[in-house]
Image 1 (cartoon, helix red, strand yellow):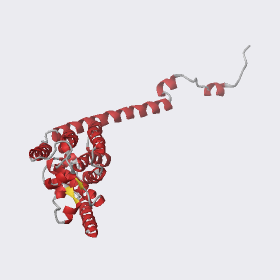
Image 2 (tube, one colour):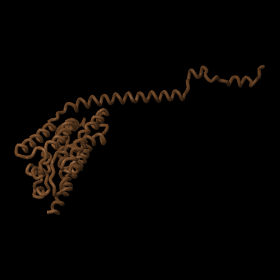
Image 3 (cartoon, one colour):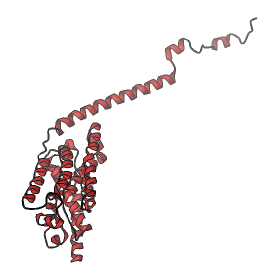
Image 4 (tube, one colour):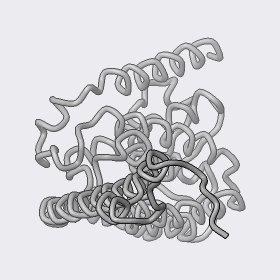
Length: 291
């Protein structure tokens, strides 16, 4: 039996759910989703191309930079150690008093005007274990950091971090003696951390992992320092680490560095320099109070 459900108008208004119109125009929601997916994939592709171009430019400029400063610093440290041993200093575990004539940092001596010890302390070590625990991280991370920042900026980071660590040590332990390059080396690693944290877009993403992996030796070095008979290492480490981080935040991007003294002239290094001067002032005030 046929039942009439409407007139000609109802029949005319009837459209099949999947007819010619659906085939021609499709499902609008589905088309929007597909379009969004295509745009996202296109964005990933463009980003990959940009990253690849950035990596090529990075490799071309950064990898060509030489690492003469790192090699020279290691050579000077080893030479000083050998001369000390030939002069009769015990090779494994010398005392603090035995290192004072060789330039270790010493509050009373600095109070007497020997401020040069703030620099020379970075080339004197408490035995071969202490020396090795510092030179391995420097050789591993220093060559990478020197290529990142260029030799001139790297030397500035190293020296300023070592000075900052030495000043913080004297400020914390004005009557004690200490030595070692750990403050300067922590500054080198702090600079690389500052580069990744503050200027993440300045280096290719593939380099981020390398930088974090490079930090493994400094963790080992800090652990070795903790068991050596020099309980004041954290003062060196903290001073150097903070200084290196702050300098990296002030320097231009690695690809903009020309590996020349002009890199430092164009950087905004007023804050790190003022920090070192403030530490020096604090050391002078405390030593005068104790004298």
